[in-house]
Image 1 (spheres, rainbow, N blue to C red):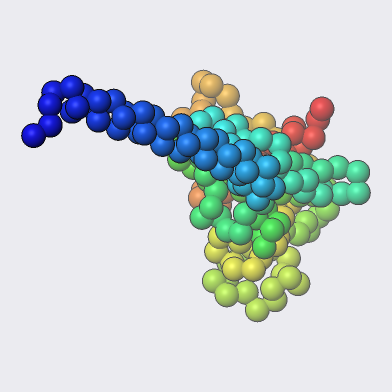
Image 2 (cartoon, rainbow, N blue to C red; image 1 turned 180 degrees about the horizontal axis):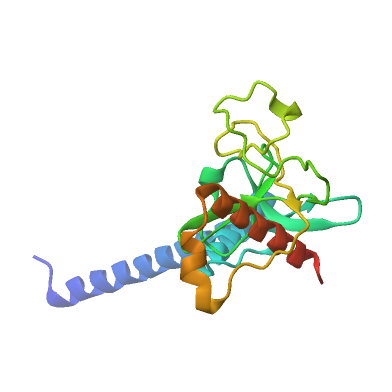
Length: 204
């Protein structure tokens, strides 16, 4: 039978061995970390993770790389996040662009606004102002009426407007004026709001 001193001696030896093993494991772990840090794939994944965390931790504020320049004309561009459908528009304070419809979009207070910068016309018979009345339009792009891409799949129409002033109502008469509007007039006013917002974003 082992004496007390022999048992203590073996415990000390085991402690020394365990300490050495721990030091070796820590050394191997440091080498692995340094190896990963120098790996370009790991660096890229870490950057992506940091970018995702930044986006998630700051709602409504995406880094500049998330935006793309959307051409308005040869001189003017608007920065927006490109997406494939209106379903992807988030209520996060950012401006989105749906390439398939050539419409910008954003959500505020649970409501979707969408559209693009149209033409301000002074003609007697202006086009693309009133809504098309047909559920399925046979004329397609040759139709003189406006086709909302939420109802007409594939439409890239921009709503146009008549040059007769853009102000609507005042605080004292707002409730009555809103109640007098038709559903199409409300839609046209919302599209005009989008037109004006996009113009305002270009005024730097």
